[in-house]
Amino acid sequence: MVMIKYLWTACSLTLLLCTTAKAAEPSKSRTWLNSAIDKRKAGEHWKAVELLFKLRERHIGHKRINLELVLNFIQLRQYDRAESILLHLESLTLNELEQQKLEKLKNILIRRMRKPISAHRWIVDAGASVGYDVVNNTFPVLIIEDYQSEDSALLGDDLLDQLWEDADFGDFEYVDGYDIVAREDEVERQESSYLSEFINVNYRYRPFEPLDGFVSPTYFIWDNDFSAEFRQIDDEAKNKYSRYSVNTSLYLLRVNQWLVELNGKVSVHYNDGNKLLTDTRERISFSIPHKQHKFKFALDISQKHYQSTLSESNSKTSMPWLEYGYLLSDKFRTTVGVKYKQLRANDSFLSYDRLNAYAGLYYYPFTDVSAYLTFNHYQLKYSVDDPELVSWAKEDKNSIAFGAKYHVTDHLSFSINGHYSKNTIELGFGEDEWQRLEVSLVYRF
Image 1: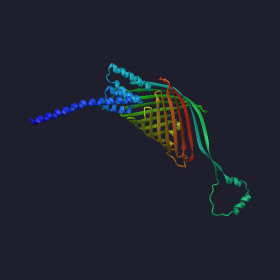
Image 2: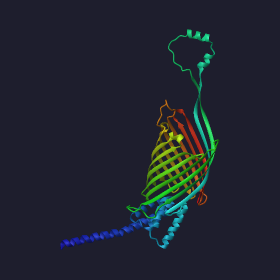
Image 3: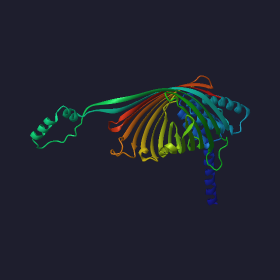
Image 4: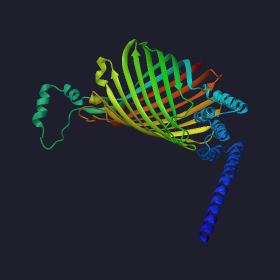
């Protein structure tokens, strides 16, 4: 009897503790949710997101938690994340009032993204650009004087013989007979403008329901781009250039945890109607977001196939790269990264290794306005660098790009972009400088 009494007491205490814990759990969740709502209203969006994702791990189907996440991500301009949560909300059972709220939120997000939200999405952009290029090629020119020949031309044969006989032959320093009296830099300047028309068609398929077989909700996305560009260059040659590209990506997305991408791209280039180059690329990348941080690891494998007369330039390239992004605020975003490119061409003289470090700053002052500033530094080393065979060694290149975009309406946008780069060849063999200014007008159907 005593043993039974102790067992009954123990079971009663265990049941009481479990009941108390279950009762405390909803109370704790309600406290966190109320705190997240207060932080959103106070403008502390990242702190609100942190709380809400902790709640979502326990209550993934809770409508208000998901709704709050969408509101915060819209304020943070994290539209892709907001869309993912919104699509999950659409898969839940909603009453009439909840459906009305969801539709209002969809309209806000669509206006911000300027893209429809649906399982099948089509977007068509068409536009035109006017650009102006300036290229300066600087290379050294040595002014050489053959002084021995000039001196001997002033002397007669008899006098030369006499000088030879009277010469006191002793130790002397060998002179090759040439004297460099000046070194100048020659600059070739080329200016040209161009007019280009382009069209891009995007199709995306994204099922609302998550994939089966995963513990946490994981979504599948298939994204495709079909683009064409036609460019008329206003220079002496009056060249016409065209390009056709197909770009397709498969994504696996676990919201706020990771994103895996498998990508393939094919571009065909033409010059004056003649096929010049076929360029292909395969990519695998893995992205990890954490609060306002984002880490991306990727590997690109590409091939270039030129027309038969340029087959020596055919090449294969491998390029691993790493990128880190940080959201400074709801108006500023920055990225830094590094890429290592190894290009091996049929002609070994065209093969090289290149290290590329880059940084970018992106600014979103208003919903309809965005701007960017990027910097790239390249270090290039040719595989063949024997001074007896070639005159190049290492090259260093720095480039700056900047631009701004303004959405005049939901369908019409205007942008201006600039680019400046300078390439310096080691050992004083010269440098190249390139400048571009471009203005574009794009209409979205």
